[in-house]
Length: 368
Image (cartoon, rainbow, N blue to C red; front, side, top):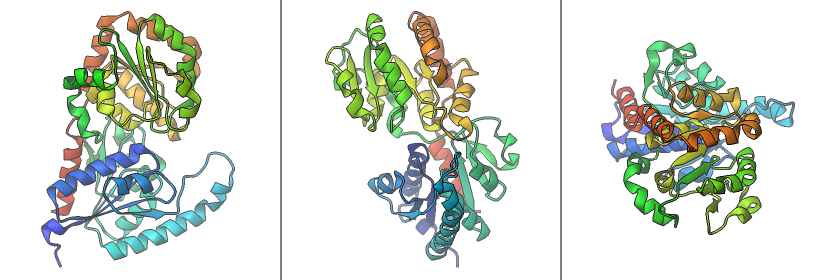
């Protein structure tokens, strides 16, 4: 029996990090706006942050007992086959009971088993790949799903060409008109009007190497007359909060008003997770990327390199911070033309309609 159009049932699966969760929520919000009657179900990994973030966004989530393969010998690897079987079995139950009209995977551990079951049952499925270098799960699933929405060129090296649609990554809606918020942002953070602002972001949990760099170079930033908004991450806040002072350094565990933080910034130092890179393209400011070397397939370095290739950002490898950082940063601070060029070039790479374009592709699967 054909489903009543507006009462579609949609499963979204993904998580493990904010980079997989936020795109899924953005896509769900767009589809919910188009189909207020639709039912949504998220599927995530039991002990990861999606179990908290998804209900906060107003959606139901079910958890699978799953995790990735560790690179070292560990108990987790021994458990992996059991977790996989358990997750496939639970995914089967979820798909059978919920009867989705479409399944959307945004990457992360949980999306593998769920999409595998969905495609085996003939449910139309779509992958949203955030990175310039996909993980193993998406490479395997790409042969079976109907569509793959990507954010970078050249992914036909990994995926069937005829399934790829370049849409970009969903970003938080509040970022789309950052440039109009400078004044409000300066007062929100109590910043001095005539001093340049450096924003430092190490991802939602923080980045130890970036925090150590900041601690080391605070005097140096001061000599350049910069004021600093430093998001050190909640794991590190207790350790670094004492470096904050009223004069020119603010230390935050987490920035809830990211649009204001970006709007206030003249320079940005950031990790190169796919979500951050997509947001920074829209923001259009000079960026120094310090990719995390600890992620699967070193995809952050590849994400950043794709931007640097377009003369649109600066990349410093984490291992080179002590020798390279001051030199590269000084060159940037002293070159207004270069700052302008980087800001303009990165803005050209922005794909602002990503969420709508992905939802359009989902709609095509709902109405073949």
